Image (tube, rainbow, N blue to C red):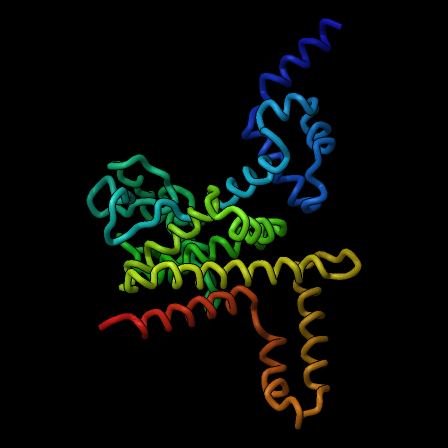
Length: 303
């Protein structure tokens, strides 16, 4: 009895809000929204429901905390900018580049990365990892390197790809982001996304009166594209892993052949793009959409 009591005490000592949130993310990744239950948490953490609710108010709060944690890891923050109050992210030493993604107090500078160090966006002091030739880089990469201060267009691509990659890795994320945007835009996630997108759009010279509309357009495109990909992954029949090249190639081949089988007189355009659709890469297509929006923003700004 004494031994059991001591074991229970040790479990309570190591239980924390951070550990509960991490476990919630693991459950969501493994089984989607339906897998995040009090019973699953208590079994995974070897604790009782009361101990969990001591750290998180309810399951909705836990789901929000999981979303916030993933987004915090995915987005570079604070976003480097050409101006604006409260910005940080400079280099500590001359010639060094501040680390995007590191949260700093007002007045502090971003920690510089080691010389030649590469990494994924959102990690302090790291620069974006270079992609393969012809392949879009991971979030934070712009041609495989970053200068002391990125162009606004490059910062927007880094934010967009950070969200895209996070939603690809966590299939439950896209629906939660869309829900928070429409139902709770004052929560922690939506302001962070808008701030990350809005600052570089402002630096592009977008007129002040168009800031909200332009930023909303970008945010809705990003969330729409990520939601579509997440839904497509969930719809793969037979429980086959949706992210394997074999499953994806078979799906695109079926769709391409179906388009080519349509009446060429009624659907001449689909016949022309059927092979392009089969050969496309989702991430590259996503980035192309960002570039189209940015081209429109650049073309419409005052000169």
